[in-house]
Image 1: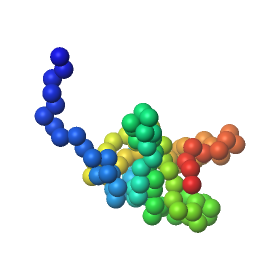
Image 2: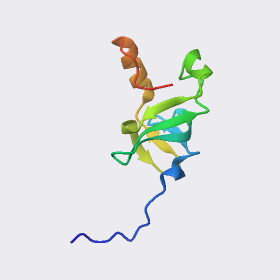
Image 3: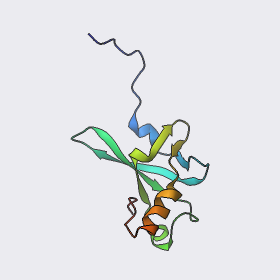
Amino acid sequence: MEPESTAAPAEITALVGREVYTNNGVFVGEIEDLRLDLDAEEVTGLALGRTNDELFDEDVRAARGVIVPYRWVQSVGDVVIATDLLEHLDDAERDGSETEMAV
């Protein structure tokens, strides 16, 4: 028999409005919505708005925002810390592949 948890479960909607930073302290954007896999009952991505203009090209700035894969999230607290998105963007440019970030 598993012990019962005394902590209240966190609401995933509590993530909305939090700022996302890279692990190097660079502001990425603000969480506006979540992408969910309802079958697996898990968060698969963070939909960001108010993104950092210095990180993203003109096409992204003209769009509504970006979706960061949740697997890139390292920690969640008052702010959300994600792996260095610049590394992911640079890797995609070097090998000619499409970045995993969606617009």
